[in-house]
Image 1 (spheres, rainbow, N blue to C red):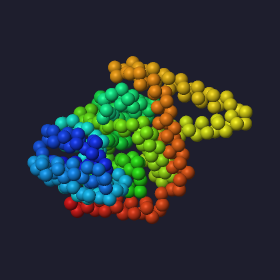
Image 2 (image 1 turned 180 degrees about the vertical axis):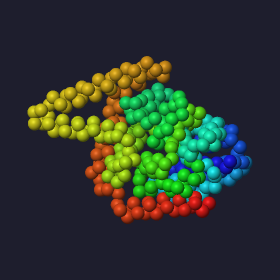
Image 3 (image 1 turned 45 degrees about the horizontal axis):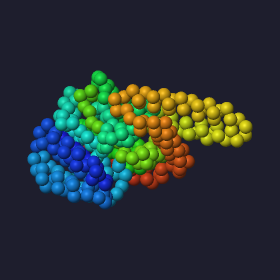
Image 4 (image 1 turned 30 degrees about the vertical axis):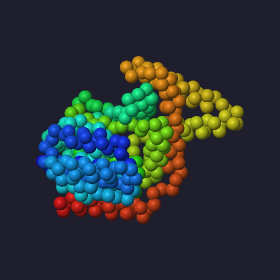
Length: 349
């Protein structure tokens, strides 16, 4: 069965070589693997890395490279989807690491009768040092925001609302179309919401696993959390059904801080102190538990500062997104046309 792997890359010279090596090591017959790369306007060596790879490894069914001007993830994915020929389409994040049996196991699950599948997605760090492990601990912790089921390897097959590095039968795109290009960080949520609404199930298999690299610095993590929060806030005014209530916990925390601080100025300070002390207790408790891990180091003492930085960045992002004007109607209409374009491509091919 022909499988298409789609990869979007923007300035990924740091992560792409490792992912390409993982693709080379796939046990699934390379003659049945099509690769579609979208260079999303990279300014570094990303384009050259992909071209060198295509020139050197010719045992794949086909390698397609599409150069595209810088755009959001949804645009990049739709561009890739419009160039696929596989019976199974697999999205592979450029910040991923995939084991040698990744494609093979996805095909097995799809062939067992599933239409959409994937597996757990633990986080890993590019820098195996004390600081890298500290950031990893903050990112993968439930307190740090790791609440989605697909972020952890499941012990048994289960059905969930969203998946990372998902594999899809071609029929799914012919039914629901492509990604909503009006959305930024929430395009996966909305896409999977439409898939479930169309009557499909999203299978999370214990036999499938892939890994995602965390951001390489605290600053990049904070920027990422703010951006995630911003798009949560903007999406809730447009397509709120696709969002989990857990996304709004950081926003509730930030809002409670704002309200209690205002009340403190009027002499009602007990609420602010109650919130701060409660948060501090959780903060210290999680940090203490982190020291029980084998990877513990003195850098973990910074976790009580890292956790609130991430929470506040996400919460402020959501607040700004809610205040921001809703996604313009013309942008949504354009996105719907592209969703339909992808749908018609898969119906006709």
